[in-house]
Image 1 (spheres, rainbow, N blue to C red):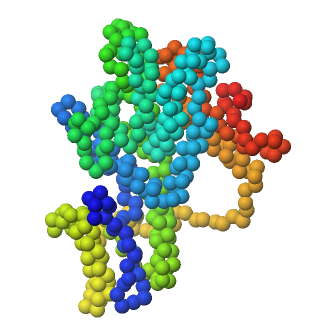
Image 2 (image 1 turned 60 degrees about the vertical axis):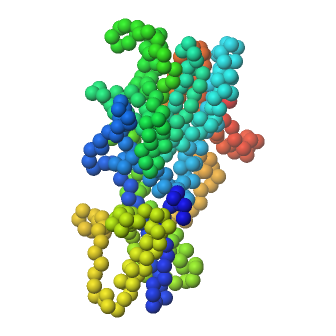
Length: 412
């Protein structure tokens, strides 16, 4: 077994002596989005510290794993990003001079804006924030590059006494903390006023003290855009986090596993044995097992022991104790009731729902335009403004399948 191949904790096993099976799984939803205690900054070398994302700094990867386990949720998240993308980002240049139009065209061609924009739309829908890096030319007079930094690989520096974060750290944080030379350290512009901050740093306007600085030698800056949330933290809590806190996410996964077992040989599942990942980690640590192949073999052995305990005659009447999380009152509460409605949406309803879904992206577009307004203003492209038309499905009488609409003008 490769060192990078994950250990399989989930399986469906025969129960000895009876025509039934047992389903083994890890805790299906164990991710904690809001920390119950304080999280301490983590040092990078001697001069830098960053705030971990989750207690073990693995929260974004846990989120991705939970989403990828569910084919419906995964598809819906991509659909949400595509809805936000609309017809794509453009800079409206109708009121611009020919010189500005040429500069903007060169900027778009040189920066692969469609890839950048679809990427930040996904970051917004998955993690409720995105990061763009702007790179200036040699004399600092123009922004020439715009680069997306994947949100799951970004970490924020520690805020000062005024709540200001001035550094962003970009690296592969999966599984282990990278070495200092593996981390890209980028100056982070003021979250609340990135354009003003950039203008001050480049000596174009005075700072809060009324003094104009000398132009900095730095030519690369990060722009962080966050979705405002009721609980303002370093890393926003995605709106869909409640899916994993409830039980329906787990139930849906169990239905698939149970169906799979039944289709294999029609044997019913008698036991569902849900085991925390920490249980396996404790066994490996206690027995000093570090080899991946041996760890997998030990998992199989332990499952056999559990099945023997459940079915062995000598164990009749005995109890197996394990920790579980229950309602604070110890009650089983039915929070969701699903009623079947015998109806189907018409074509008009579907068109309206699709239009409404795109119209609801307006606040996200306004936030995503922050860095593009910064680029336009700093580069002095007068008359230009960012826009993201959305696709409106039409009726047959219009003799077109769809048309693009923008909120800034009536129709294009």
